[in-house]
Image 1 (cartoon, helix red, strand yellow):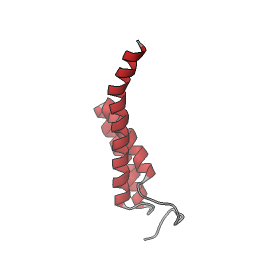
Image 2: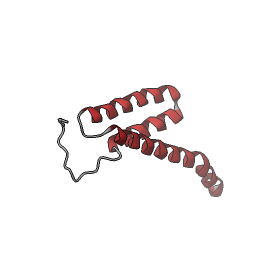
Image 3: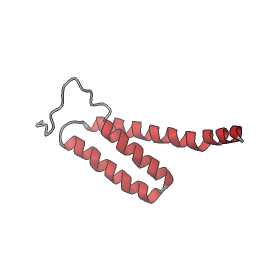
Length: 92
């Protein structure tokens, strides 16, 4: 494999940080607006494919980033929907 971007061997590539952030953003937007969510998913997929293409990640790294991004967006959405209502009741 000819890497287009040189990476230090001591840096871990699993999961992909770029994919994690891109998919977390895509899921967060998707929870708010499904149409724009698909646009952000397409961008996240393009970012992730680019990371594999240049040789700095394996597809499994991208899958790990996808799962981390999904979980992060889900957790924030869950807290926002349920827990903030409790905080609002306490503050009233």
